[in-house]
Image (cartoon, rainbow, N blue to C red; front, side, top):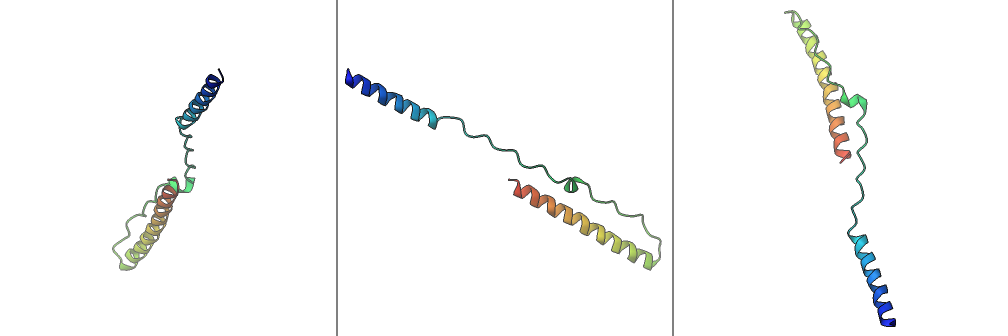
Length: 85
């Protein structure tokens, strides 16, 4: 009879250990939301300048500045997405 008690205790211990090993994996937390500043679109370019060289040069410099802002937003968005993985 004592042998049956030991076997029953051992069986319960083994079944308990295997139940813990086959339990579901822990839930993965959702990544944090992206900052709202990164979700805005790039600013549109200004109107086309006249035919004067100075006006074209000023418009081109403004376009370069807009590109810099858009490129910075894109880079921050890429980094935020990579950090969220």
